[in-house]
Image (tube, rainbow, N blue to C red; front, side, top):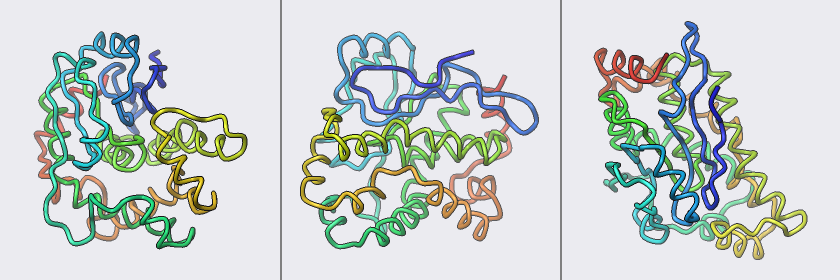
Length: 266
């Protein structure tokens, strides 16, 4: 039995995907595949802990402005190859708009709908980096870490794609997704209630929270199951299932699927 949540000082939402069961009775290997948020504020102890994992690949879904402002501490991954999302022309996505601008222009209900729609956009805008992620996994460039800012949205979609292709059921995938609420969503909720959550990574967001009502912020921090269900509904309508999406948009082949399962499952 491995450890699901790794307590790493300065890391956000760092989790091992090992142990999840597939529908046909297999399970994901431990210490092979990790998901998380930003990795820019790791303590010296956390850097040593991470470097001991022997990570071979780090896949970063963040926008360039996020990477520039909060660069990953490369010393935590001395033997890893790094893969970063590259901006391409897309009519429905912007890497430059601030959260403050988004929050100011939308109601709380609109923000909630915005996130469901955003997940669908990521299926296209991040197709290239999701393909790279699957290529690294299929060629056994593991252990592998994949992440975005909070390890919730872009990372949550990536986890959903991987687990779906491995044959993990949607109930289990949703359970994994909702674990983020305990490690990200509840931080801001705790702060809003009693002012005790002052993690370095949340200072900018706390500054925003001083200026707008909490109910408008909640959709931003929540790992809400309706976001993932909205995405699944789109995939089912447009492609039939996640595997067909991966074949049509990510270039996944029978060989890659077989390699993924051989490399990641016991």
